Length: 334
Ligand SMILES: O=C(O)CCC(=O)C(=O)O
Ligand SMILES: [Fe+2]
Image 1 (cartoon, rainbow, N blue to C red):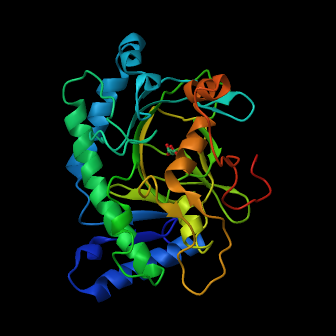
Image 2 (spheres, rainbow, N blue to C red):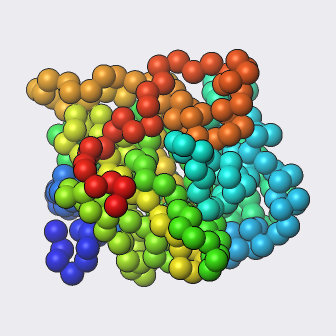
Image 3 (tube, protein in one colour):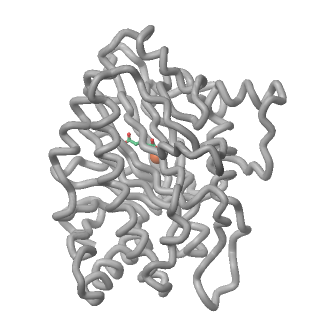
């Protein structure tokens, strides 16, 4: 742990080294950070700041458009849960909603065979430059995500390419999120406390606002550090690692300035069954099908999907409550 920052900082540059000892050294640091906190900063020579800047400009231009234009690409019209998410669409628990709007992009799967509820052609908005900027960022960060999967394999004493066969068309989602600033808003949360559902998340925010629940149940502000990403463990890596790494709860409180953030949630292939993969340990988690878990959790929060479930158009199998993973710590409502 690096004492200069509130979260550990791991430099992943050497994941591109040809020497496995170098890659192993990064894997050890990653392992340590994920066991201690489950949230960390990532930096590395691989990160291309130009693609990050281009994504911010694209998001600003997109969200500045009128609602009627944005709603033409409403997520409820898509085949694979992609598109524009207006304020109020996502609802947690007792009817509360987050003060944010988003554009969700999924793996743009064009083949006819093998489509799943979260795997199909992405719904793109009719805005010049949007698709190319977003795809360039997606491919870039996806490449970094694959390197990190390799490091997790090493950290868990698996063959380095263990996850490769499960990452062919994974429905890893990129969200472009806009948190508008409203000085008059009382205490509207930007995004309520939750764990992410996938293996891990790489987040790029433009302003502070993110808070992480620490082991004592206190909310920790996560400052922005230039040219770094924030990484966290999700439900599926908690299972794969048999609880060695825990999905850490986080939230965004009412923002004090306009904010954009871009999480890319790394999942494995839709049909891959997620179960503890660590050798020689008694499994502490039940297996679940990755894509099914993602869809089930999504269908419990998006109002267009909730309506489909209520009308019987969509049936969920093996759904678990939203708060099934991560630490159960007192003081969460603080
Ligand atoms: O905007 C952020 O900083 C966090 C977003 C987040 O946690 C999420 O979308 O799951
Ligand atoms: Fe999250």
